[in-house]
Length: 321
Image (cartoon, rainbow, N blue to C red; front, side):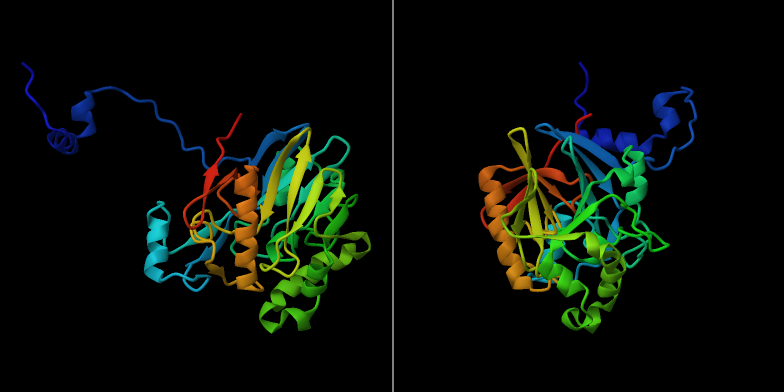
């Protein structure tokens, strides 16, 4: 009879033996490490529309203490470690959808552009567009969810020239007015205003102001979700009887601000209003089972929202090839 070997003794045996002793004298081919993947885009269909998610690169917020508030440091650390995340460093993605409606090509948000305020990995949206086979000059419409630096920063290049020469630009009027006015934003947000003015003023004559609950482009419906900024807006994009919601900065993190959506975020203009908008919109998305694309969630940010006891749960959608 074969002796009974416990799991613990089996692991101990494996730990005590070298690879060559366990596997004999087998020869293995040696291959060089290939490095990071060269492409940073993802494509899927919604009805008759083709959606391509393009990345602007990872944005490093650093230690969440003081940035995410409303629970103790110990509880926040446990929320992160329970989900296998680093409790001392929050890194966000920047996922912008490009929606091809057949007769119109629409980009939502433009990333950090030339600013390196949140690390050196940002500012790759133009590269991602090229990797996806999309020419910036073919973009018909650029839609801004709000005027923060990481959403409007990629309109102009190093030379200050418009990178989307054939596009009309869309933003909420309240956000445009706020982020191009030093007095309204205040001295602490001077860099944000500098960046907004640098990117928005060169296309001022091409700006169109959308309104809440307006279908301002065919198949693109604006839903005001203020608080993160005065005019922060999310969008339901519909085609061929199917829809998804680009949630922009409704929530910045798939655990924090989701499990406890009444937590607050230091970059919100009005944190309590932002929490109210977050709960209202997440309730709507969960109840209607509308798929989402979240700007700052782990790449490519596509998934679903489910209601839980006191908050919500984000379920990433399986990537399809």
